[in-house]
Amino acid sequence: MNEQERKEIEEQIQSLPKGSITIKHINGKEYEYWQFRENGKQITRRVKGQELEVLRLQIGERKRLEKLLKEAAVKDAPVITSVSVKTEIYKGLIRIGSDLLRFAEPVRQYKHREIYMHLHDYIYGPGNDRVFILYGLRRTGKTTMIRQTVLDMSPAMQEKAAFIQIYPNESLATLNQDLKLLEKQGFRYVFIDEVTLLADFIEGAALFSDIFAASGMKIVLSGTDSLGFLFAEDEQLYDRCFMLHTTFIPYREFEQVLGIKGIDEYIRYGGTMSLGGLEYNKKQMPFASGQRTNEYINSAIARNIQHSLKNYQHEGHFRELYDLYEKNELTSAINRVIEDMNHRFTLDVMTRAFISHDLGVSKANLRRDREAPTDVLDTIDEEAVTKRLKILLEIREREEQKVPLTEEHIREIREYLEMLDLIYDIDIVISGNKRKRTVFTQPGLRYAQAEALVVSLMQDEMLLELGIKERMRITERILSEIRGRMMEDIVLLETILAEPEKQVFVLQFAVGEFDMVTFDPASISCKLYEIKHSQEIFPGQYRHLTDEKKLRETRKQYGEIAGRFVIYNGEASVRDDIQYLNVEEYLTARIHMS
Image (cartoon, rainbow, N blue to C red; front, side, top):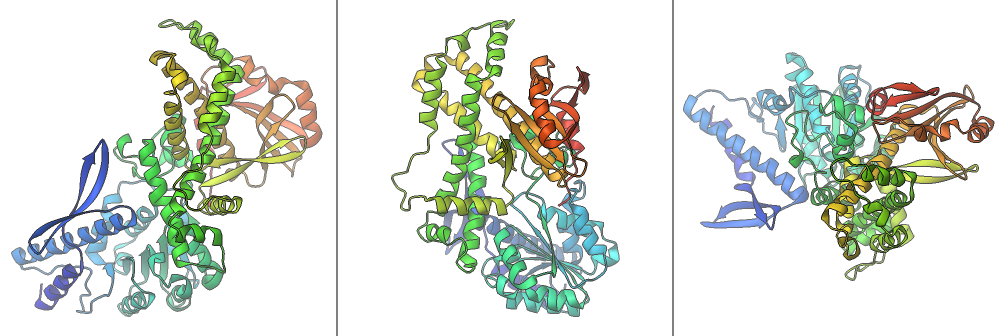
């Protein structure tokens, strides 16, 4: 390493924060702290969210450069770094050469997401003056896909590839200088991570397509700020970009990429790619507990929206949310809307559990239990319990709330959650009219909140009189109902996304419903489905599918019935002309191409 290279690396080290991130356990909770020495004193400061992520990256980069200097001093050999070999230094953090390969190497054994093919086709396809935008919530595989792209390149392509990490307060002008330098040095594949952290990203986004992509560079922009990218597409990039959203992770990918099989596991933990297919450790999952789920909502969703509102005041769009943001109420409002949707979902399921046919089956099963038979469900005052649950689950105004939530606030939050691909509305048809049912595309988020709520409710004073064993049985019964309802929603959502040419909906009658109908307008035919969270087969599961009155009404509206099915947890089978389909096999056959 020559003196000039050493000096440039030392300058980079001085510009990066020192110290380390430590974790402290307080009252059973984990808190991250930044520890460093200043003027001979030990400084400890609590950090979280985006600041924590940036600090981790910067401290890691400082340690890497310090290690390079130490190794060079010992070996006295040239070292390839992110500094230009022509002694020209970049303004930002740029990885090239062996530094880029070291950055990419940890994901070598990871399997590709199915949407990866779109990024691959862009990199290897002909030049077209377009940039590629890769966006979605945290832990949905954006950076992993970029690293996989680098690893899949030939050595000749890798020599022309660069990865740029953007930090807060960087400017487009500085990035422009680095891109010009990279172009001068012959780089043709440039990946820019968290590009929307640039304060002037929206105003100058056309730079990437009009200047660099037009001259032959393949530019990949990635980040979590969905609104920023959508505004950039609308204002600056127009038809000069490809957009790929990573947030929705279907069951098929959960099983094939992460190697985790089972619909219940997907219900509990599905929604992120944080495991990378290795070392399945539930304690690391973002939806492993109610606390971790709330942390994810804060860091991945609420702060995402805050960043958008801070940087993009787009013609007054989301003006009600900006008012909440200015009063420091936005995060609380987002959490409350998400909680409200999950509370209403939980209330609906719990109420149904106490009055449904399934509860009757559960009562009989518990009476016949070989190990510990009980008639506890026979002794519950269902009307009183249901009334109490409704009171407990009602969302109350918080005393510290400065800005009361209006319908407009809620509408804008829901609109943004839809833009994040976090929620999706499913049609429920009854007597020709439609209403909506909201589905969360990250099932682990919904289940963790519902589970925490049910466990909490079972500690209610009235229910405590039942005793712990009885409460645990009721809790599991209700959670089983929740998993059943969620399985219905998952099947509906994935069918809708996999079969866009068809109409997919719930069809309700005066009494009973078909859990799913797929109507094909081209052939004027339909298929009818019941969805059961069960491994057992019994006639009561498909009683609606054999109800002649319901079948006549359905034929009148949706044409020939091409098939009747029960989707459940057991093996494929046929009973009374009803086809039983295994839910995991059904979902792995659904292919969603964004």
